[in-house]
Length: 48
Image (cartoon, rainbow, N blue to C red; front, side, top):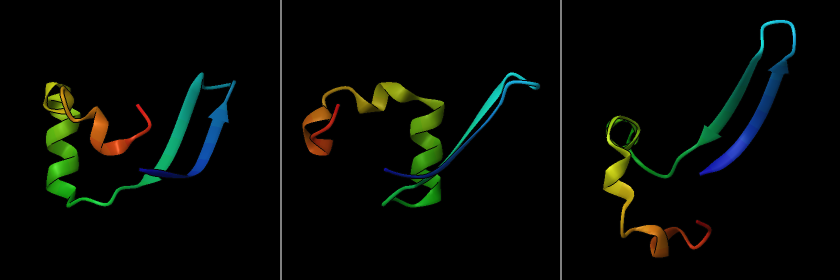
């Protein structure tokens, strides 16, 4: 994952992070919905 932009709003108490993933959109959403799928995969990314 490469973060390409961040935007914060103290007025709205929000933080927006824009990133690029080297995976299909469907796979990214699968991980978002069930982060347990990342367990045991930390060695693959090298930066967990």
